[in-house]
Length: 80
Image 1 (cartoon, rainbow, N blue to C red):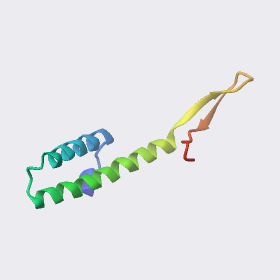
Image 2 (tube, rainbow, N blue to C red):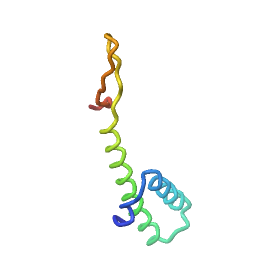
Image 3 (cartoon, helix red, strand yellow):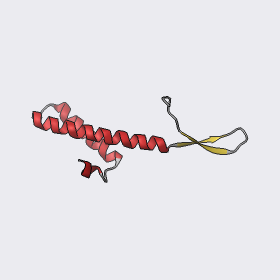
Image 4 (cartoon, helix red, strand yellow):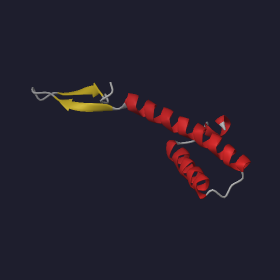
């Protein structure tokens, strides 16, 4: 799966993850198929989470100060 993810984009991975979730929710798969899809889903979930973390680190907010100048500020979540 790692080889397949090399050129994978976030949106593609998320779409595949949604597809896997749908198939698993239907409950029509064999145990082996379910386990394989579940494993693939976990890997895709980890990939998506890492992409979101990368994006979060890159986000910057332009902040206009009281003197009218514009500065960049690293985006921080409530957890940080």
